[in-house]
Structure formats: C-alpha cells, structure tokens
Image (cartoon, rainbow, N blue to C red; front, side, top):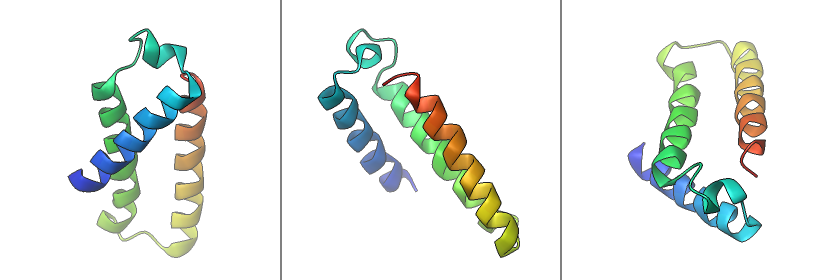
Length: 77
C-alpha cells in the first residue's frame, strides 16, 4: 500500500503546486501532511476488505469516504 500512497501523494503535491495552492506554498500543509492524508484514505478503502463488507454497504461507504476526503481537500485548494 505504501507504493500506492507515494504515487498518490506525489500527484497531489504536483496538483497543489500547479493549482497555486496558498496552503501548500505557505507551508500550512506540507509533504508529510499530504502523505498522512493519502495514507488515511487508502487505509479507509481497505477496511471494506478487512471487514468483508457486503457490496451494498461498500458502495455507500466508499461514496461517503470520497465525499469526506474531497470536501476536506477543498480547504487547501
């Protein structure tokens, strides 16, 4: 999972730089923060496997997890 997190964190960092994110530019968030948030997202995704959730529950869980992270990231864009 760490390899996936590294790829996503780097893509997120590049996105923030290209977007001109003031939060990233000023150091409000940094590479370590990005790594932790990306890692938390993937850990959350894998919970559905660990807990053998039924498909119907997985779809709702993933939808809400994505909404949670997407809305959280908006704070830093």
